[in-house]
Length: 476
Ligand SMILES: Cc1cc2nc3c(=O)[nH]c(=O)nc-3n(C[C@H](O)[C@H](O)[C@H](O)COP(=O)(O)OP(=O)(O)OC[C@H]3O[C@@H](n4cnc5c(N)ncnc54)[C@H](O)[C@@H]3O)c2cc1C
Image (spheres, rainbow, N blue to C red):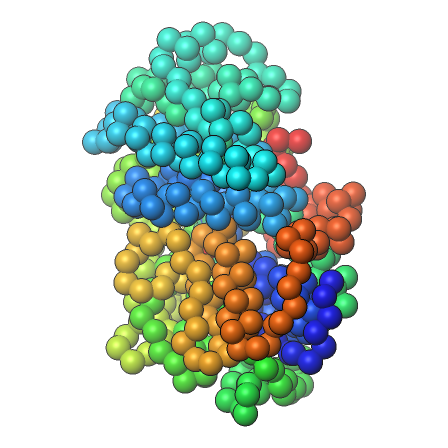
């Protein structure tokens, strides 16, 4: 790692944004103090999908989709140990007004852009051969696949499609189905791996169970008040990174800056399906967000576990779950009942009724799935969306004050780009001078002990109240 002992950076928040900046700045030789309120890093809102093309979102621009593709490839190279390389199947239900054909022009653009990225650097080929970026399945092919037995270690697109063909009620969807190389992301592996790396970096100080309570501007930097186990500590920093997730506004308010932003509370549900032990792709059933037919997302984990989203108010979305900041204030206020879910947890009755609603939502298309049972507390949390467009999916960082970076990612794939923008801003401020060879960007991977990762990710899942199986990969 490069050496630059004179510069101290404090990062508030140890979610994906904070840990990515910490790793990147440590590579640049800066001394980093990473402050996280919770016991573990990466314990904020969940993520399960690498949006390598944004194909879940019909409503966003082609431009956002292309950025999501490029950022996802970058993210997968930065955190390869968190990627579950199983594909995603996109289905347009008959009840939906859209058509599969309408999705094809964008898929062609994404395929061409992916081919260009691979040509520029063959190491970008993390989604397989560009020609196989997506594959169409008509009803006749699906009927043929329905007759085949699932394979233990699916490799080809057809092999991944077998469990879908055997379970899907063909009368509920429009053909063709689309299999696209959008992979899974495992948050427990990312948390465990990033913790391993940060603990080994000599110029990173990790402060967990520590809360930033106040911030003051100082000459050429900041003074940060932190409460840790009843003790008060003051930290001096040359540069401050606000990566406090949906609480970014509270740190902004302490630093005396304002911004327009939204915060959204959402949840995904965890169930187990005895008959679902084979290796599944993820399946997306498109639908209009916020209506009873909102998009359904069926995300597989090992051991017959599934994470479910349903973009309706009875499942993933909540009444008053999307709030905006009031004029002059930086922090949007979530209703107390939703904040209480984040801070104190859920009643088991609500967990069960929402999980059962999610199972029912997906079983409309996959009838045998109705046998699935609630397996754990939901994966949930609030996230920030800068500005006033709730469909925004690509957002990174801005610099509202000198030596102050405000991170606002909407999808985790934006995190490495965001870290790069912070490096540039610090270079502009004269705080980072050293140039590094390009390979330096992935240097942190040499610190990872892959053999320990699987066990640590399983323990991490268990410590947060989820089945240990969820720390494993489907495509292993
Ligand atoms: C249900 C759901 C599903 C999602 N699925 C996906 C997906 O599949 N793919 C995807 O890319 N994205 C997904 N997202 C979005 C993704 O979760 C977020 O973009 C991402 O986790 C945000 O990371 P972050 O580091 O910005 O914030 P966080 O993870 O919230 O981290 C901020 C941290 O700051 C800490 N903090 C706050 N205030 C203080 C303070 N004063 N002192 C100390 N620490 C503080 C918090 O404890 C927290 O750990 C999903 C979001 C939800 C809600």
